[in-house]
Amino acid sequence: MGNIFILITFLFLTSPLSGLDVGVFHPDLFFEEFDFDETEEIALVDDLKLTRNKSLSTKVFSVVLDPYQKTDLYAEVISPVIEITKKNGDRFAKGETLILLDDTIYVSSFSKAQAFNNKAKVELETTIELYNDGLASLYELKEAEAALAESESNLILAEKNLKSTIVSAPYDGKVISVHTKQFELPQKNKELIRIIDDQVLTAKLLLSSDWIENIHIGIPIEIQISETGERVIAYLARIGGMIDPSSSTIEVEAEVENRTEALKAGMSGFARFLTSEEE
Image (tube, rainbow, N blue to C red; front, side, top):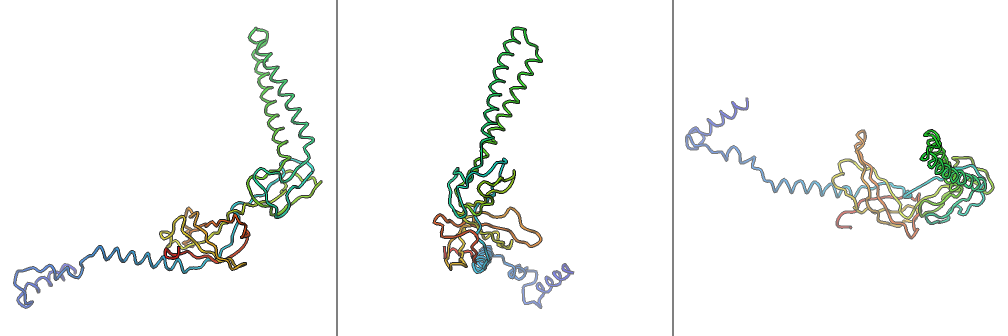
């Protein structure tokens, strides 16, 4: 049908009734309406992006400020609690002792393991000399080597158990809660203390997948804290690895500096992305 329409139109335009010269083809009458301006298309795309950016800046998200890290420290050995050096709310530095367990048994076990290891080393050296002189068999040599390997394994285990009587901080942070008491005998793998790193706080947001091309790492986000009314600036730090196909959303995470401790983990607020004019 399309070809028939074009043929009829062509015959009409080239006929005397059309007012045009017969046999003269006028392509502008066919294609003038479909002229393509690349500049106009680029401007249209830019306007669309600007519209999306503006809509993103007016969108408000409810957020909760989470600590950068939260860790539960457990008892790795069974021993009475001698001292709890940090309480709820106390700050600590990386490597600082938080809880001390009685190490009497573990010091003894370590010393015993050291003695057996030293003995095994001497026995292996002696057996090697005897083997080289033809006075010891290959079996006796391998037995001495196995005894040394076993003693070294026991020494490593004893050393680890001894170190486990000191519960140390893995990073700079703050105590959130203590789950044991002085002189209590916590069981192995029992939670002793919960700590956080709140020098940086994080806020998670769920964005429509349509906006993914309008965001990037480092883009500023304004958060108004509900508890204080204060406005703080966070920066987009992570963009989720995949879009949730069921909701067409992607999770992003922003970070806000908190070295002055003006903010508390668990605070809530409302966040919005800032436009380039507001940055």
